[in-house]
Structure formats: C-alpha cells, structure tokens
Length: 85
Image (cartoon, rainbow, N blue to C red; front, side, top):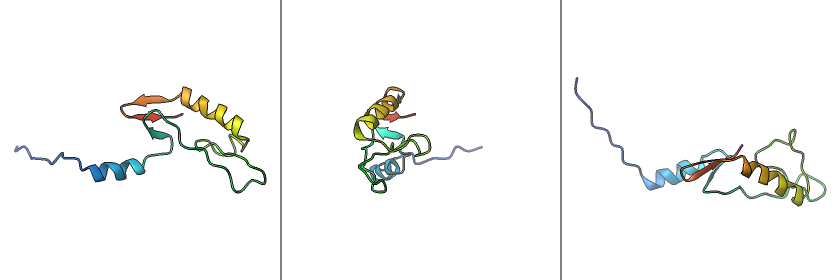
C-alpha cells in the first residue's frame, strides 16, 4: 500500500471566505456581533442576533445589552474564536 501525498497548504483567501460563512454564534476574538435596530418594529427596538423573537422579544437597547452580556458570559473560547450559547 502506497502513501499518497496530500496538499495541506491553506490559502489565506480561502480562510477569509470560510470565516464569512461561520454561524452567527461563532465570532472572531472575544467579541459579540453588533446589535442592530429593528426596522419592522414601530418603536426603536432591538433583536438578539442569536435568539429568535419567540424566545427573546425585541426590546430597548439597555435590555438587549444585559441579554448580550449573558451570552458573552456563557461563551466558550476556542483558539481565535468565541462560540456563544
């Protein structure tokens, strides 16, 4: 049985494209995704980028910051990434 040679080189462009395809709960470094104002709510409300509206209803900015801090405190760091729960 012959051993086959494999090309294990990793192209930087491929790495950047792969990073763009990561799930929203996987962030580079110790960071959270930006919180965006909802355009579908009548008053200025914010959605959690991780939770669905059935679990965490849109709310004001101060409450979403507290909620996101909870995600950050439960996050797992792996290499250069943070995986939020």
